[in-house]
Length: 107
Image 1 (cartoon, rainbow, N blue to C red):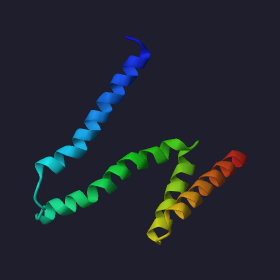
Image 2: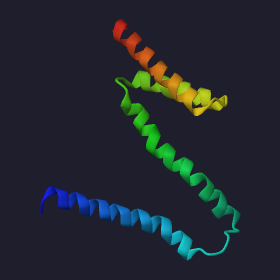
Image 3: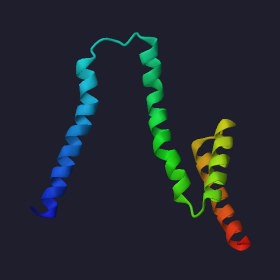
């Protein structure tokens, strides 16, 4: 089997899996969910998944662990003070960059 056929099969399988994951809850659960625990659980699932995907990447994306921690702390503090996404992302990137420069010149 050539590479194009394999890639096409992979894309079809991924499309089917994605479709099933999105379609099955709509088909299987027809009435409104009234259980408070399930509602609160489903409310926080996207935040938990996003955190699980992003936080490990933060610590491995920069050149050193020190600059990653500085960027993480800046992003955390700015978000706790209610700053927007663009501000948090921009200033945390700048802090990582400046920390890397400082570490380069000191070390």
